[in-house]
Amino acid sequence: MVFTSSIPARTSVARRAGRSGTPRWVLIGTEVLVPIVLLGLWWVSSANSTNTFFPPLQVILERLLQLVQTPTFLVDVGSSLGNLLLSFVLASVIGVLLGAALGLVPALAWFVEPTIHFFRAIPPVALVPIFVSLIGFGNETRILSITLAALFPVLISTMDGIRGTEPTLAMVSRVYRIGWFDRLVSVTLPAASPRILSGMQVSLITAFVVMIASEMLGSSTGLGAATLLAQQSFAIADMWVGILVLGVIGYATTAVFTLFRRRVLRWYLASQQQEKNA
Amino acid sequence: MTSDTLRDAPVRLSVRGLAKSYDTKRGSVPVIADLTFDVRVGEIACIVGPSGIGKTTLLKCLTGLQSISSGQALIDGRPIDGPPEEMALVFQEYTRSLMPWLTVEKNVRLPLKHLRLPAAEREERIRGALAAVGLAGAESKYPWQLSGGMQQRVAIARAIAYRPEVLVMDEPFASVDAQTRFELEDLCLRIREQFGMTIVVVTHDIDEAVYLSDRVIVLGERPARVTEIIDVDFGGARDQLTTRAVPEFAELRSEVFELIRKAG
Ligand SMILES: Nc1ncnc2c1ncn2[C@@H]1O[C@H](COP(=O)(O)OP(=O)(O)O)[C@@H](O)[C@H]1O
Ligand SMILES: [Mg+2]
Image (cartoon, rainbow over all chains, first blue to last red):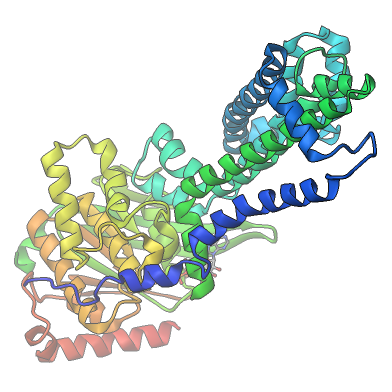
């Protein structure tokens, strides 16, 4: 007997219906346009400002053009961005590995979880002075503070995500005798990935805030330090340049991460959409 | 394959005084009291019984997913105390048993990875299994893009491609349309013929049980016991039209029907 497919596969119709009503270019356009419009408003409203603490945007941008030609400024930007990215990557890797271990081994979690919740309860910024007094003012202190602060969101969401894995999928892995490593990589982590990536998003924001704080507390390098120094020495334009560049870094890293998340979780976002339409 | 050679085949699955209770907050709840039956190599056995009687629980014990409270389940004489390598299970909750982040084709491929098959054979198994359940052309779809019946067929294709010696299925044709159901029933008969697979199916469709089975195991009472084991002697070659038309078919189905009604 020949088996003919009695139900035709749902094709482009389902896929088109599965997408949200807003086209992609509108979404991306909005993300680019909104900051430009805000900058435009800033430009116009500050154009004739005589307030020393609120100079015209034009003055700030001119100062930015001068500063980007100075090595110290570039070193500051590089140091801030480098610390932010390095710490975020470290926190993500350690957080996923540790979170997976804790999610998979209940005995381990029972042992370690109270400690985790204790440290998580401390506001991340408050960790900086502790590390400064423990290991001094070096760059390692900053990386350590940022990494540790950014660790908890991704760690906890990985743990929860893995614990919340659909039990049927775990049984499928057992029935088909998929080895522990394949199970982790091909089943457990993908199943937990929506939660893991939400945690990473919070980690990124935390890392950004603690990055600035760590530079403002007794550091001489980095944008945070430069901005604070400018404010204390009444170099108001320099201060605004620092704030502006920090804003751009924060916005750009979040935007890149959002694109990454959307790419990794395409299956998840599309299936959620499908459910909503159904 | 004739029914005589089947009756002489060695026992593949042996259930001996199996009992199962679940430990819950309100103490131990007995679900299965005492089950004893055998399934021989190459046989198709259907398990029927009212819903909630413990059919899924029994299959989970047989596939090593649940521990057995007392008695034994044996495969080729070995006690089952974890998922045996020669078994595959099609879950009743088929929608939740597929990986939503993998395409249909990759879902079928996943369990084959660790079997270390030659590439050509692996690809042929995947292609063949998907074609057999009528899903050729849907390889690159995601499960959530498919209807319930199609998802169920993906789960069946995954089990078939794995080529288990014992294929266990929990209400596998529950949400497919009538035509596809007939095709999948015949697919069962064919893979039994082709690979000598032993197949255990839970079904709530009495006609299906009689059409497919070499024996129908009827469960009844709570906690569950075997009410009756009915031998079906239609042999290996069956036909949707002629087999269902013979007088014995009607007799068997009313016999099973009566037993289930009494059990419920
Ligand atoms: N994990 C479990 N813990 C406690 N009770 C369960 C569990 N799984 C099933 N049961 C109970 O066992 C009984 C049999 O369930 P099940 O095996 O799913 O029946 P069937 O498949 O025949 O419909 C039901 O009363 C159900 O509530
Ligand atoms: Mg059931």
